[in-house]
Length: 73
Image (cartoon, rainbow, N blue to C red; front, side, top):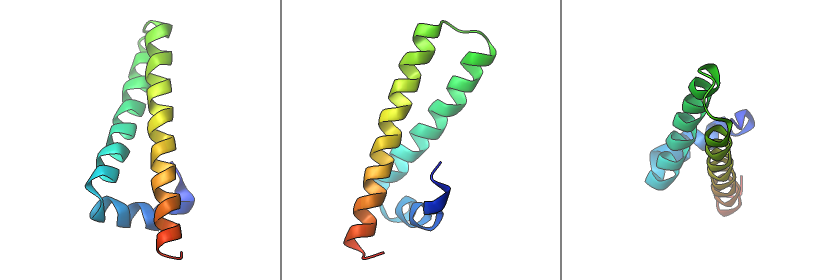
């Protein structure tokens, strides 16, 4: 996710506990969704998890953009 922001993500994970938590939760949900799809879980539940993951992705992106603005990167 957001490979073009690798450096910023690394810095934010070290400096911002909230960012690290959101980022890790996104990754955990991604793994959970993959398992659910592999095991043919209820599609309603899968879609619910995907929406939650998308919200987290949006939050991660917004934090990165703000960080870049604040630090003139």
